[in-house]
Image (cartoon, rainbow, N blue to C red; front, top):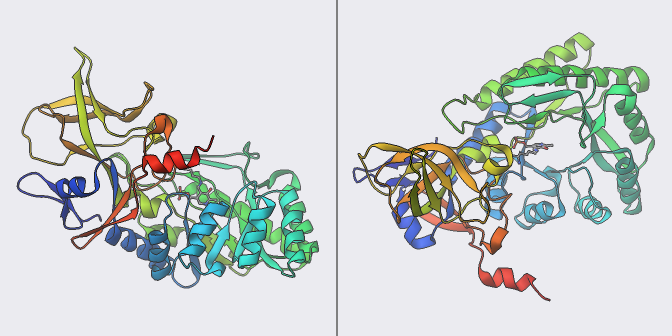
Length: 427
Ligand code: LLP
C-alpha cells in the first residue's frame, strides 16, 4: 500500500514527506508518485506470475524514464504503443527484447525503428500490418517475432462482461468469420515474420474474471485450429491488461496472485481439454500497477456555495491534468490534506480552472465545511491515465510528477513552463 499517513496536525505525509512541504517545493498541482508503492506493485505482479509467464507493464498508463528504470530493475517487460513510448523506453535502458510494440496504426517509420531496435515482439493488428511488418523486417534482413491481436467477442466493463460472436471496434482481427485464422495463415507464409503467439485484450477496469475465461477459451480454440491446420503449437498467449483498481470504496480489486492463479488455471484447463501444450502466458497491466501509486495535489483557489445545491471548490488544475471524469464519468474521492478540521462536512464538486463547465475533477464528495482558499486537497488513484492523457487546454501548463521515497522527493517529470509552450509556437 501507499506509505500515506496523517500526522497529529492533520498534515498528510507520503513516503515520509508532508504534502505542505511538497507543495512549497514543487508547487501545485502536482502528481505525487510513491516509488516504494510502485515497485512493490510491480514486484507483486512479477512474483505472482513467476518465471513461466511475463508481465508487460502497459506504458500508456504512465511512462517516464524513472518508471522504465524501476520496471527494468523489478524484472518487468514493457508494452509501448507509439514511437514516443518506444523512444522513452529505449532511452532509459529497457532492453529492446523486453519490449512489445502495440497499436492499430503503427507508421512505417515506427515499425522500422522497432524492428531495427530489436523489440521482442510486435503485436500485429490488421492484415495490412502483417504485410507491412514482414516487408520492413525483410528489408532490414531480420525475422521479427510477432503476435497477432485478435478480438474474441468479449466486451468487459468493470463488473460485467458481454460475450458475443462479433465485436465492433477498431483493434485486432476478428476471430469470428475465420479472419483470425486467415491472418495466421498469411503470417506463417511470410519469411520476415516469426509468429510466436496470439494476443487478446478485452477491456479496462475489469473486476469480473469470467470475461478472461471466455477470452482464454476462444484463444485456445484458435491455437487448436492452428495445430490441426498447420501442425504447429504456438508457444505464447497474451491476455492483455485491464485489471481494475479501487477508485472509490465500492471497488474491490483482486490481488495479483489471485489474478495470476485464475489466469494460469483457466489457460491450463483449456489447453488440457484441447490436448495442447500450455503456452507461455503474458499479461499487460497498466492501471493496476501505477494507478494507486499516485495522487494529485491541488491548492484550493475559490469556494463557492450555491444555495440548496452544493459548493463548488475550484482547484488550480482540472481537466488538463485529469480528463477521466469529463471523458468517462470516472469517480474519484478527495480529501483535505494540509490540516485537520472537525467542521461539518459539506457536499462539494471539485472543479478545475478551465473554460468549460464539464471541467470536473470530483463530481460529488464531502469536504470539511471550513474549507478555504489555500487549503491543499488530494485526489487519490490518479497514477494511471492522468499525466499520460494530460493536455494544454487553455494553455494551462502540465503538472510535474514528483516521486517520493523514504523521506526524499525527486522530480521525475518536470512542470511544463510557458517557454515549453512558446517553443512549439513558431508562427
Ligand atoms: N494492453 C493493451 C493492448 C491495451 O490496449 C491496454 C489499455 C492495456 C494493455 C492496459 O490496460 P490497463 O491494465 O491499464 O487497464 N484511458 C482509459 C484506459 C484506456 C486503456 C487502453 N488500453 C482510462 O483512463 O480509463
